[in-house]
Amino acid sequence: MMTDTVLLKKEPEHKIAWLVLNRPEKLNSINEDLALHLQQTLMKVELDKEIRVLIITGAGKKAFSVGADLSVFMGGVTPDYAQYIASKGHEILAMIDRLPQPVIAAVNGHAYGGGCEIALACDFRLASKRAKIGLTEVNLGLLPAWGGTQRLPRIIGLAKAREAIMFGKQYNADEALAIGLVDHVFSDDSFENEVRVFAQVLAERAPIAMKLVKQCLNYGTQVPLEIGLAYEAQAFAKTFTTKDIFEGITAFLQKRKPEFKGE
Image 1 (cartoon, one colour):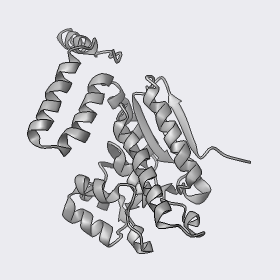
Image 2: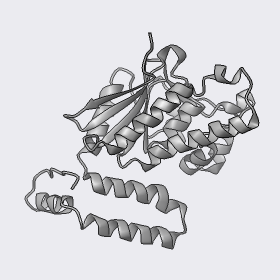
Image 3: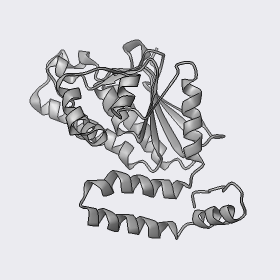
């Protein structure tokens, strides 16, 4: 019986959704089918205004994702096909960067190689106590090729990233927190609920402003300061074309909680 390798579970009452990497019997390793369904699901999320925050996690209790399904490589991979695999991964994970919604990686178990790289592409990384995470490709004679060599230094700094990648280190949750690889660590028993609460707080924010903030952070920080500041000013101006800004100011003056519509 075929199983969907990626599931999308919406919680409309909370304005959030869970994208679940669903190959638990293979520790949610990434094969061509999962990569394709991940791309298709991200396209759906981008257009779904009911989803204000996306959470990416892995099925089961053992793994977020252990990265590439290595059986894919056993038949032999040409350099041209290897470059295609890398480019396709870049394309898919760039979709996470471009999503208007904040994206949370709920790292509920092992997150190695490509699994770690998926988490790195997210806006937040929340880990359960049992989680282990790292870019371990060098241990196999490979290197991180889904953006790991570029995103990890931007998140934890070049020196720490050099050590992490060159030694193929596997960090436990507390170690990952200490170097800034994850943002928060929660107990295994309360993990799902803690992630949901974190996501709900984000989901209450003004969607258009959140989209613009994400763009400023992701793109404005990668260009010279004066260009980033110009980008920021343009984004600020755009908020004044929305109804949400007036709802936010009115709610503040009336001392009530704002109800943003994303308009």
